[in-house]
Image (cartoon, rainbow, N blue to C red):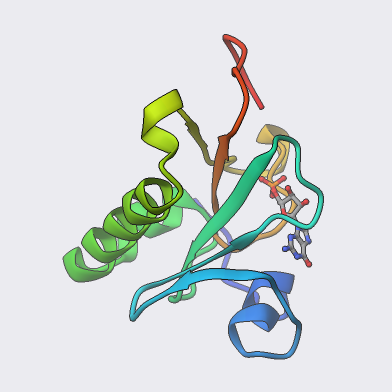
Length: 120
Ligand code: 5GP
């Protein structure tokens, strides 16, 4: 099972306005901003506003409205950047062993270059 949410994580601090980010999109359910260490020409992070550790936690606990809002926000951000024309990649790491560094759910959006067959 997922461990409890720790609201001292860096994305919680961004959501509270305690740390800056390069914001791309924000609505009731989601915030999107540029990754501080981009791995592709377009590297955006989309996070839900609620306190969810990971996709595992989110998919178990979030309301249908939160889930729908978050999924739509990810799609909207990608469409607004016209990423669907060339193709893009969504990635969520779940757990430390999968490479998750920040314990607040984030979906990576990668684009702007041809993407290889596997991971980021
Ligand atoms: P993870 O490895 O947890 O899937 O991805 C965490 C991502 O968050 C990394 O790509 C990392 O560059 C990014 N990141 C870490 N700290 C910050 C920050 O303070 N601001 C922004 N914009 N991105 C961050």
